[in-house]
Amino acid sequence: MSFRAREMYKKVVRRVGGEGKLPAELMASVKNLLPDSKVVMGRAKRGIYAGRHIQFGNKVSEDGGNKSRRTWKPNVQEKRLFSYIHDRHIRVKVTTHALRCIDKAGGIDEYLLKTPYNKMDTEMGVAWKAKIEKMYSQLAQMEVGFFSPEEETKIEQGFEEARAAKREHRREARRALAKQTQLEAGNAGGDKTAEAASNVAGSYAESVTPFYWQQQQCMATILTTKKNA
Image (cartoon, rainbow, N blue to C red; front, top):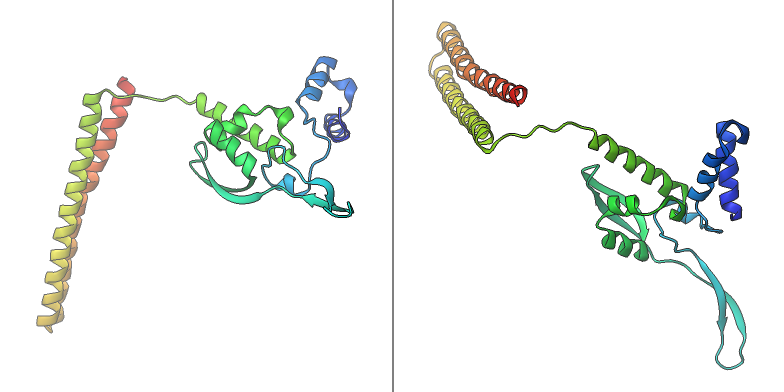
């Protein structure tokens, strides 16, 4: 076990209250799950580097053979990767090697699920892997209801009729509003304006009410279909 893995193991044992409170088999499995890398860059703790770290070496001159120390840093890029479990793009710093591994695995979710815990270099990668595994396990426990093609066609037709009725009622409301504007411009009397406004309000209420009734009826049909299924 490397020094870093040993320190992580001590931290975990300290959190649970000591080695005597847990079985020896469980603590041995915890040791196997810890990362086995010896040195990790500080930058690697804030992204997915897939084992790529800073390299140290010498730059040797061609003539005299003089050596000077130099370093090779990994090619780190900030990318927006799509996560299916989150249903959105997430912004993360990755190396080009990690990006190729993610493409080969089929996405950021698949990469985190397929990579073992002992190969995740940083605590950030371990936390992401545990979080995504938990979200997928919760998704697997959800109950999903399916409809037959005929029922799906009926539900879709009901929504189409509701949307068409909504467009028609909005069109009638706009016409009534335009008529009210014309009456306000043509008549100076307050009684006629108030009467026109009340007529417009009544027509708008009459036009909007059927749409909500149709929407409630469509939702009731969906719930009844689910219960029968």
